[in-house]
Length: 428
Ligand SMILES: *[C@@H]1O[C@H](CO)[C@@H](O)[C@H](O)[C@H]1NC(C)=O
Image (cartoon, rainbow, N blue to C red; front, top):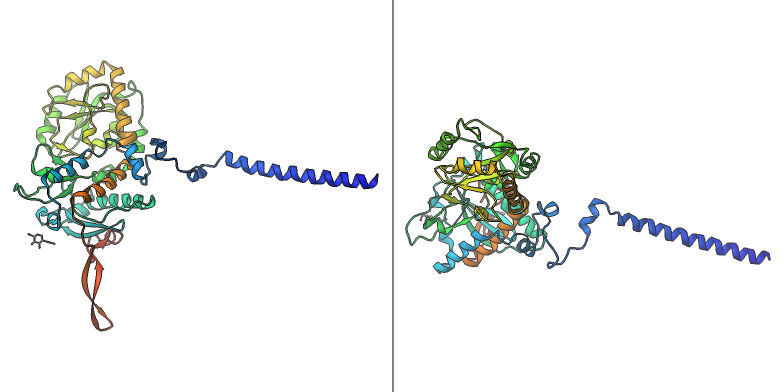
């Protein structure tokens, strides 16, 4: 009897132990079931076919894979494809002489990508574009390239070795001879200009940051979103601020058209760019050439009013002026139809809402995200190599080694990491 009860009690102890252990497993299991925020990043990567771009999750991801970039941004690469087609049609492979930057006079950079790293080979009077308080475009552009390369490396993508030239001027003045073959990466090209067809359009420097705005681009996006409101909750006017001495033909005539009108708030005073988002309509004006402002307007839930353009950029082809996908209001360059169009939409909030919705989906949530910017660069590196030479990343250099002169193979250029700390001076 006693022996039996001993066996029984042992059995109970073992049974209880098993239950305790099982419960522990259940608790741990449950902890993962209510996974902490950080655990989601270790979730298995979905296969390419099932993956879709989720702007809340992916907008700031500089390291999408090549396939994810294609899935997320099918209409992003219009200008890159145009450039490739141009050089193919011309049947000319971009060579070493074509990336010589002496023609730029100022604002030229010659650079190299080697093993997913950026190296600056030569600069041509970039002083103004580096030191001037609102023109640190050299650093802003190179930083974008650097970040895109980090993204590529993070997903195991090998960027081809390429050598290219950049002009950070408002509008680069390529040599105009028809047989000239200089190729250059620029912020904009003049629509209809034959020589500008040789340009490769890159994302504007202020996709990184913009000194007058006093913000990194992503902070500017957050600030824009802080003004989100209903159509009725917006100030029922167009807004414009800026320097009227730049492109006065266009800007002064806008002020003349809008001044004293109850549907317009146009002036030469300062207004923070995110305060433009308080209005129902934000007006874009070209400056010396293109203006970087448009992407900031397109990150508001405001209707962008865009005049007929003389300069195009890496993303301007995504502007749709009519139909169900209309995402802005297009007006004449002399503003003659501005009043009529503004009044039309002021009376039709439903149509205004539709334009805003399209604009948000196209630009803020997709094509002007940092993720899209990184994808654009990486696509450009590859596409450029399709029609350009493979550079020799090395050069021979004589060095003094323990009193003897020795010739070594030496990587060309100053690495980006060092360049940003040398006030733009090259070290080799
Ligand atoms: C660039 O071209 C100029 C003018 O033709 C020439 O003097 C210069 O040596 C070239 N520079 C390089 C690095 O090839």
